[in-house]
Image (cartoon, rainbow, N blue to C red):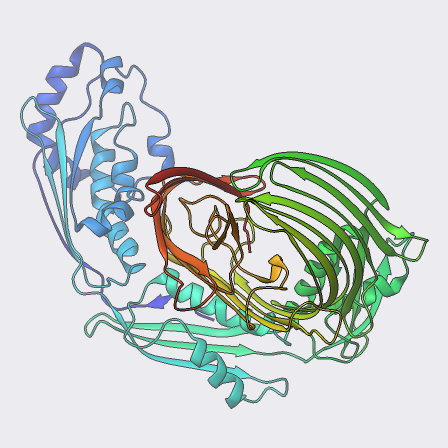
Length: 628
């Protein structure tokens, strides 16, 4: 097997030098230095000095080395190389690494200079330059420091000419379909610049695609990179073997004390007999760790335990405490100060039912709710019942809402779906207008796709949420209506320190008017997660001295973030949007400003100073975590 590049003739290098002084010792330093400058060339030839510098040659200073020689470099290096290659040579050349070593002898400097061209050639080869021209010159002016000048012309880089990728199947014969599949995903395409790091990464990625799929015994059989320095072309050859195919066996579960094995089994994305997949194992472990029942989980499938082609799956879990009481405090620019108390029972009535209750008191919102959730069904559904009571006092509108509902949700990889049947009764008290009461029995559906690289600190990907729901007068409702809503966030990385964030939402309630429709089905906007620069839910329909919900909504936002350090960054943004009772009356208002970003241990914290153009005022908004 040959895993490295093969290349032809060595780099062209030339070397010129003048006399080099020997470092002085004791009282004879000046005389020895003058003598050395006149005779070093002949002495180097007669003594036949070796061409490399051993570590032992420079590991310790000679006896009696002067203090003055340790205070400044014995020699200087002038490196003439293209700017993009300077860090590579500066950080790896022995000639630069040893220049501050006290007591270095002149013959050792000579050897370092002699060894530099070969080192430069090896380093440049890793970046695709196989025919460099290298010149070394040593200057020793009278009474001045020694100077070693290194001039490097890298030449043209080597490009990939052809790629021959072959995958042998479990029978040892080439698998054309699998070879074509990996070839399409191959990163180092013909015409690309050949670098050692890219070559190694491409091989590793190709092998990983087999290993993380259904081929856990895949291996690299042979790899070869043939380099032609004359034509500056590289021919790449890679041969992989899938090894034997495997399927999943049964589950072996340990660590359960309170809950039945069905809790663990129904979280598994695979069934016995299905093709082996490392991705399925990772998804299974993530599902167990995200489950409220378990504090920790470990999933493993050891090929050495295989029975024939079936690999058993070992699952180790650590259960959470069944009951938990928690308290919290906080503050939001939208809803004000907050205190909260939560109670969870993961084993209600000893049936693994999850009973949870929450009481939240905020300046502008107060709520209490009770939920009973059941273990996942055989088909993967999560069912729950809920009871809630809310009160809000926002933008001159006071609402009281009581609701009872049932929900069924399901998660498949990065797609969440939910169906909910809910009955609610609501009273509205707008300042300066008549109060009213409405009720609705609604059926709602939600679809969410999550495709981001991090839940805490997203920098790449997108989130999309679509909703549809409605109610009818014929079924315990004050009005007939259909509600449509869409929301999306996109993260676009520019480089490691810069990114763009785009956000948008649109909604419409199809009805004869807003009368008789509960406020949580209508739209208001403004605040930290919509149009910054305006008070929370202050954009909507004016009714007396209050702002109530309208039937149409549109918002859009563009933000640029720059990270000065790993934890701290800044942002500039522009928001636009509004809510109205007709599409024609929807006139977007604008907000823009600057902000600070902090990657805290619990998620992203944003603080924004925004200017609301329509109200001619500044507003401070802050938010913690990903709101979606």
